[in-house]
Image 1 (tube, helix red, strand yellow):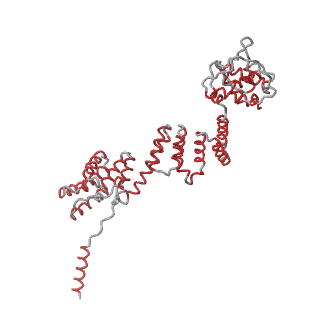
Image 2: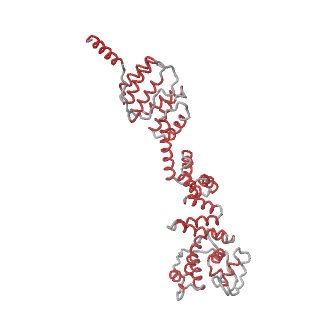
Image 3: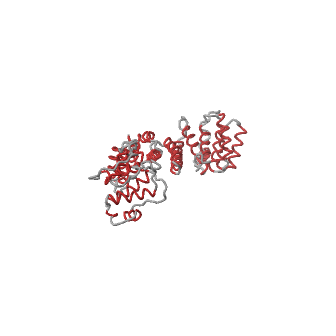
Amino acid sequence: MKRYRFLAAIVTLAAASCTTAPPPAITPSAEARHLVDPRIGWHGSKNDAIERRFDNAWRSVLSGNYADARSRLADIRNRDAGYLPASLAEVAIEIGEGRFDVARAAVDQILARNSDYTAAEVYGAEIDVAQNQIRSAYERYREVLQRPDAPPSASARYAELQTRLFDQLYGAAAAAQPEDAIRFLRDALQVSPNATAARTLLVRDLIALKRFDEAKHELDPLLSSSAIDQSDVQEELAEIEVGTGQYEQAIVRYERLARRDPSGKYARRLEDIKEQFAAANMPPQFLQAMNADSITRSDLAVLMYWKLASIRFAQNVPAPPIAIDISESPGRDEIIRAIALGIYSIDPVTRRANPDTIVTDTALARIAARVLTVRGAPCARQVTGADAILAACGVSATADDVPVSGQTASAVLDQVAQAMAR
């Protein structure tokens, strides 16, 4: 009995000694965590003995034991010079040791002969990442994902690079002038088409450059999505409508936005658009005067008539004296009104109103004070002198005696209108 027990023990020990324990799990070093097994996509001849040797060499690479890995890989190449996974594992070591240019040259050489070698393409992408060539890495991973042997880790890495590339492009756009920002944002939307913030920023930059048709085209995807009711989307749509002359639609849209927002941001813009709408419906001579770099007395008469209710709707206007030089003037009727109200005077000898004379800052200040006086502004009562009248009424007008633009004259007349209303 003892003899049988002894034999049984020997058999058990022998069986135990023949069982190969599984190798311990290896946690890849930080440099190697995205480097896939070099055999993925390799279609060369395989040898079981070489495969076992490579398993050990690759474990040394993953653990960061590069000296042992190099020794094992050299042995494999001596046995099979055509075994490319060993060469790619050497690339992994070069990457781990920071020799990226050497690694890239080796990968390029491998891919030149084996363009469908998936692992080599992944390594090329990781070299791109290490050298901050995120777009190239992203495009490489996108191509890898189309392959039937794409490694499982490729999808997550691709998503990570997609985010990084989008952030790079969006950040560059935020710091760029509109023309350059548009290019960055278009690229960003190629990477992430559903990025609402990038799309609205692109639309805003296109609007800033008055490229309204392009802006509408870029905004259309949001108008057919749940984002249509977002305030910024509605705001950009309204600005496109303003830019294309659809003022009434834009006003309705901004009125709705103003009711939502208590800060007054949209209310202020709403008033601006209403003024633009009113200006767009003005006669041609008004638009011409507003856009003039230097205005004439005729232009100023037009601006006064259409911007100052006290002139346009004046009652009991006396018949004006005859002026012989206004018959061909675009602002003839407006000049006649200014003459009739005593704002403009006619030379008693020549009977000329001089409608083509350029208006200077000094002349504008004098005429603004005259309007405040003859139209009965309360602030101008018992005050004499143009400067004193303007100061009393809170109207800012310089006296540099240089030609004034239509926009400058318009701003002064707006102050006159406010003073008249007080």
